[in-house]
Image (cartoon, rainbow, N blue to C red; front, side):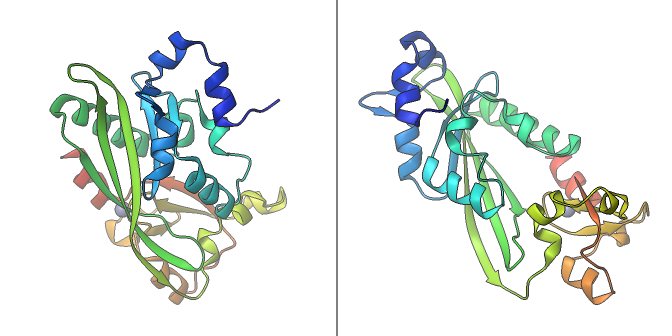
Length: 225
Ligand SMILES: [Zn+2]
């Protein structure tokens, strides 16, 4: 049984709504997040997703081939269950801690390509607080640049997920979750991380498995922040 966000909110006991930080005067936080630009969602202090701007979240889930990950189903789930890669999770964790300590937004630049679009995102992480208490953290990602290009199946995550068992034996390619550069095989060399465009120019194919990680450059940038 599923409910729309309104029904879910109406059904939630007042105490739970308060702990989720969903009550902000006459509006529900989810309604406000739905009205702002980009993809916006909030987590509580236990990293549970407490509100989602549903329209663009649902568009994005559908475009990424995962319509089942709709906004309503995200409510109450742990943010870190949806972030791939230990290093990437650690960067999110540090960014959340930093924004709560400083009460200032933290901005992360990252690529989020789809097959036909090279896309640069800016993810802003901001504390959600009343006058004295931080009650959660707001995430808002905005596309700052999008360029149409010939399709690159490397970013067709649905197709990659739908591989048959035989295809699961395909070679592994690491994809940096922040800059979208890729690296074949187990080469430790920093120069092994190349743009997807170069990867294809060098004869790379889409018949690979993708593991999400962090290239050395992004590792240094985010771990030394
Ligand atoms: Zn990178």
